[in-house]
Length: 184
Image 1 (cartoon, rainbow, N blue to C red):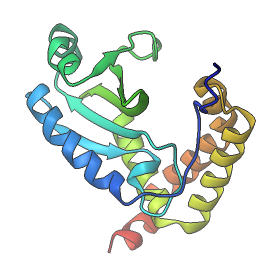
Image 2: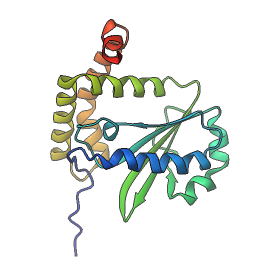
Image 3: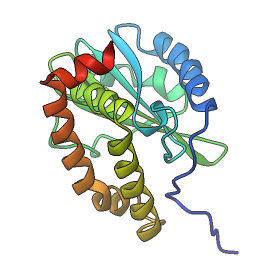
Image 4: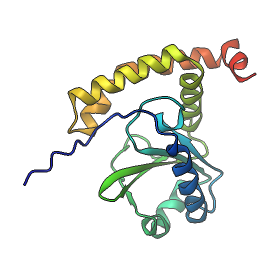
């Protein structure tokens, strides 16, 4: 019997994603006691935005090697370390978690000196504050999921151009008065 379940599926926003993150945040706080922050990132963190139903979590730690040395705590929570996921960035650890046989969480752990956490925060804020950007990002994700329902890697590559364009816009927005106006 063949499994016809899609690996990549973009679904309508689910308000439960926020609570799912909060539950996981509490668990991770115990498993990562040196974490300076544990935040909900990615599309599931943006109210109203369609997304893959996978909770993306960002954790910032003083030293990533300490996390690698204590993988057992994360393993007990169901997280599997993927050391080759981001080989170009030694300050980026990546973990996946499946729940009931389906991917449910991605955990990105960064060292405190990495610029990536701030870029993730900026992107999240920009998409949340800009309806047109959110619409374009959602369209790119849906298109990529339709083209590549069986490959997370091809899905990611297919939406990369739109993501990079929106990130460039977010950087401009973040350095202008637009961000300050949206935060008031």
